[in-house]
Image (cartoon, rainbow, N blue to C red; front, top):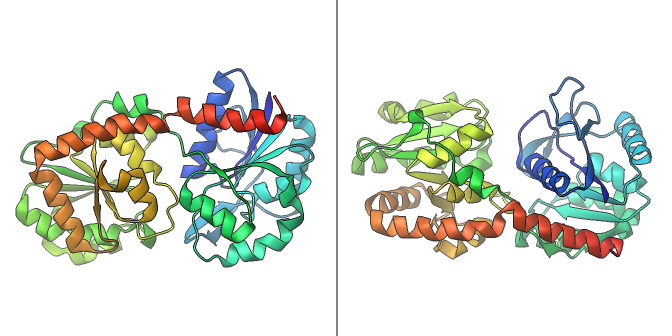
Length: 368
């Protein structure tokens, strides 16, 4: 099958949707399909050979974050040319109503379209504004996928599109077999608490994690907090005073470094405040064998099986987070049992399983 995948977000920066599209393309190619990916990217950006750059992008506030999207006459021309050259049996558009390439591709599409909805939004001016532009093209979607129940509800409530839920994928073996990095290796008297996310994006919850440090340090004087991710974290650390000494800024890290961090840390903390429809990073941490402590967002609660696979704390509540971290580090036998269950459960998210389910949708919409 010849498949065209459209990514709305720029490949110049790392992000969950970009990784999802990249990994799905790789899996499809490994199974013998011909795949081309259209994505925003500058001409000099290093890209896999199956990715076609649609040109530069603009930073736009979207879904509580800053996304790099491509829109306008140049992007539209390149999208139409890519579609004309591709001769695709099927077009798979990710985030079709984001003001970017997905919307442009859906407007110009001629054949069957599969759409994947990633975002979770309870009230969105952006979606309400975009809907009139794409309303006439929504009937082109003959197969709809949502990565979570939250994303499915968003697509239904705002667009009237029902979807089958197929979660984000993870290469479980990649994380399970990673070698710990000595820089971030936990020791019996020096536990490591890891945070990963854009450090200056409020919804990622870094301030909540930092506010939990004093009681955790009182219980475990040797604790280390490793903060990884792009952005300026200095301002967030200014108020810590003496607690600043236990925080290590790793900065942006590669996929390999992420896997090594998760393999070596005592636990991964996800204090996000909202805007999360799934929680792929939780799955990655569980695949690596790390204990997980996460805010009780509905999406995170579902990934953690309502607390069976990881510990949940009250959203935005630093004392609750500190209590959860201390409990995980103190109750080592219970924590080991929980991480073992999580390591088995994450196989439901392995790309081998996820790709089969995506292909089943493809076969349905193409009549194969």
